Amino acid sequence: MTNKIYYLATCSTCRKIIKSLPNSDKLIFIDIRENPIKEKDLEELYQLSGSYESLFSKKAQLYKAMDLKNKNLTEQDYKKYLLEHYTFLSRPVFIIDDKIFIGNGQKNILDVVKALS
Image 1: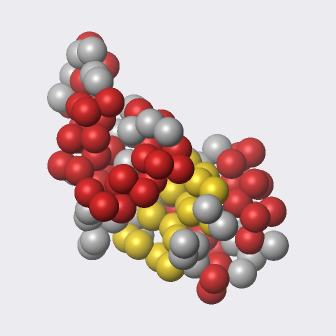
Image 2: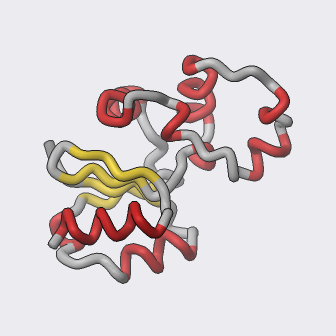
């Protein structure tokens, strides 16, 4: 499996994280706005994470705009929304040596840096 990062080039947090990474040349960069996530790729992320919900960003503006917090979302709903619009992917998402790292939390990014070192 190839080491990858799913990110948004227009996201300042993603850009800041990418700048701080050691050996980032070992990653394949996938800008999810330019290359929307395909079902095959989402399945790979699902296999590593164990759920679509873990990949889903509840901070997305669309989440609030669509009033999704007041709906009982199933795993299939999360999958559908992740495939429909890039903004629902909690980012960045890294796959490094068959491990997945989701989101921009401080501990997560420290784990990514360690995995890339």
